[in-house]
Length: 148
Image 1 (spheres, rainbow, N blue to C red):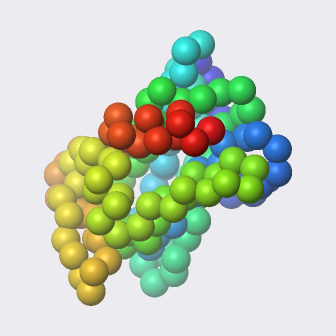
Image 2 (spheres, rainbow, N blue to C red):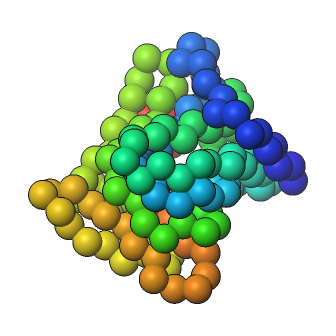
C-alpha cells in the first residue's frame, strides 16, 4: 500500500495504457484529495493538496499505472465544504468516458455530501464536521472493465 503526495498538479499523459482520472470543478476550500483504488493485487492511493479557489475551475488529475484495472475507486476529500461539480473523466489511450451533471450521481455514491442543483449543475455540500467523498458504484466499475 503506497501513497504518493505531490504539492504540484501532475499532468498525466494521455498516451499509453495508463488510466487517467480527471475531476473538474470549483473547489471552494483548500483540501487534501486522495484517490484510493484497489485491484486484484491490492489497494493503493494517490494524494494531492489542492488550494481552494472559489471562483476558478480546477482539474485534479490522477494516473493509475498500466496493468492496474480498478475494482474499487474512492475519492476522499479532507476539509472540503463545497464543490461546484463539472465532470469526472476516465481516459485510457484515445478512449474517454465523461460523466457530467446527473450522470455523476448515477455512477458515484456520496459520503457526507448532499446535492444541490443550480442551473442543471451539481453543487456538493458537506455540512458535517467530518470529511467527505464519493466512491464508484458497481455500474461504473463494470463499465470501466468492459471498456478497458
